[in-house]
Length: 181
Image 1 (tube, rainbow, N blue to C red):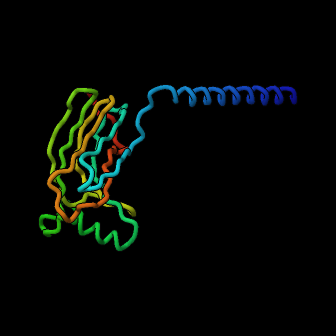
Image 2 (cartoon, rainbow, N blue to C red):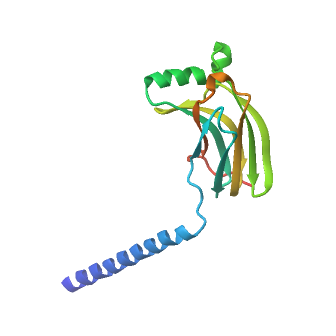
Image 3 (cartoon, rainbow, N blue to C red):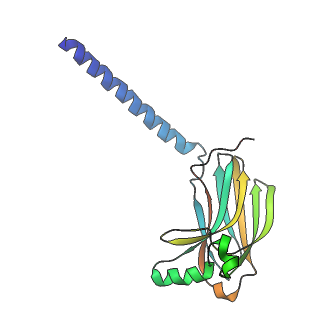
């Protein structure tokens, strides 16, 4: 009876060892395969200084993606200032007259050399915030798997936001399901 228990343990150790080795092989092999871009991906933008910002993303899922501008703050004083810049939530800001400083962009999305989208967008208000940032949505777009270059060019932005630091961010909802072709 004891010999049987010993042989099971050894067999269990062998199986665990092979599972561990298999996991290591898989982990190391994924480094050499073109892995997908971890989202969200962002790049800094300074109004009045930067002509454009380019994001590169290798997407592996057919989903809805969000291109946002994030206005970061570090303390309560900056938070109050950024709140005046971004305004109230987009759905109600027109009613309250507190839409903040509008920002305008030309957004270009390319898949390889193919132009997917080129659109001018004027955005105002905010749709989200967290403990470090306020967010405005620039564009929501469905993208299929592939390598994309997204260029965001600020245009017609007022003096109130000259030299203001922001982030251009590409993200998706992790809870969302993939779209069908």
